[in-house]
Figure 1 (cartoon, one colour):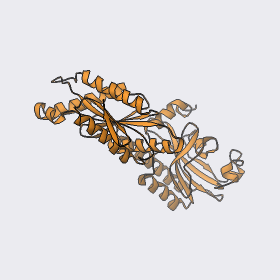
Figure 2 (cartoon, rainbow, N blue to C red):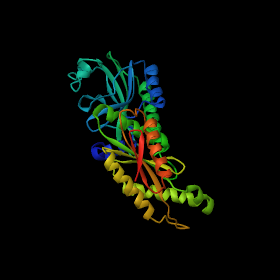
Figure 3 (cartoon, rainbow, N blue to C red):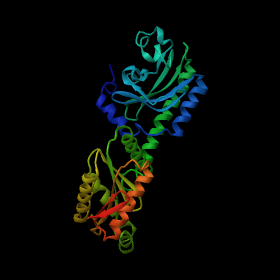
Figure 4 (cartoon, rainbow, N blue to C red):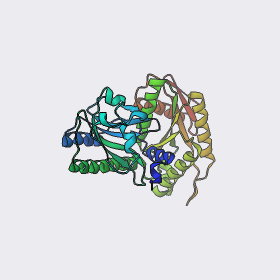
Length: 331
């Protein structure tokens, strides 16, 4: 009987999206694994391949210069449809692959061994694969090594997912939030897709800690994060950037709409009572910065929003300031 988790594509995609890893930069923890595969199995190419809805995207690819391929030609798309390793000893003799452009042209794949990357809840989100340009048999011991390394890839994905979330609020960590910002910058550079950043912090937060104690401060931070999560769109990202400072990344949003969103968040927080003990009311100040071409990194974009946030604080707090070409305007 076929495992239903091998055919439930929406659930498989949800499992992949949970890791928030697609289109992220290369990371040494994954590159070391593909380098090990090449060294131990003696193959020229190895990849950590994640199968998206219409493409396979490489979190790590050693021995080849590419970032993704169409899913319909991906060997790994076949691998994720089964629990067992997929081994192809000669692609030119395999009816599934002999006309594949990856076989008939560059990189001239002739043999392949792939292990499904199975999540803890049983969904195959991609594969760890070894690729050669000559026909070959893969020995049982080599497949066993590949299985162990595939398990290590999933473990790294799990550790990465845990490390990206702030333990107090569940929001993205600063590092993970900057990754999302850099992804938005890449989309802006390639396709001119707009995005805006809302940067805010809690007004007079030190006074809350001094008056009510640090547990009350934590309670306020959790409450504000929960409120923002309820107000934001599914496509938005909330990050805790440090202490009482947060960021909200708004994709596909230009300055005017971003300022309106910031005002909505600002008013909702001011109107809310953070559950106690003791129940508390707080305000926040916002800096808004639409992405522009002269802010090429997440850190530079963040710095511009931070200047707007400073203007909101300086002009009275509990308000929104918008960064406009080197100046900020408070509302």
